[in-house]
Length: 141
Image 1 (cartoon, rainbow, N blue to C red):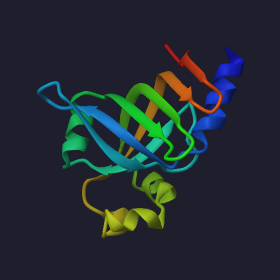
Image 2: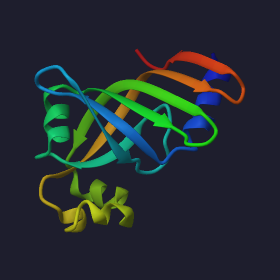
Image 3: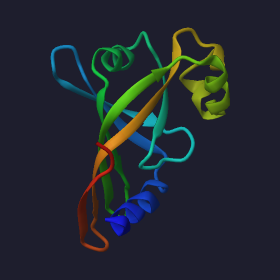
């Protein structure tokens, strides 16, 4: 199991953008591309959002989320399931802020309703077509 988890950790570090999948109020999945903030790991994955968006409302009403990573050329994929936590701490928002976010949040870290989303994954599946490797890993209970 440690080998699987180590391999997954190395694989996750190669991704910067993910599809964050939330559950809408009518129970339907809703996915959108999101920039990850900081290192991506099996312990936690960070995103930034506004709480007055569909995504923000979905997370507040149902914190169960999926995250999907895919590479374009070398056919490596990771699917995570976990629980999202909304964090409104302004100092932490400033710490996690990156200039790449400016195009979506024009007022910078002072954008109204801005919050961090911290996802703690509890299950992962990965596929690596280069090595014909496919695994399911339980990360936390």
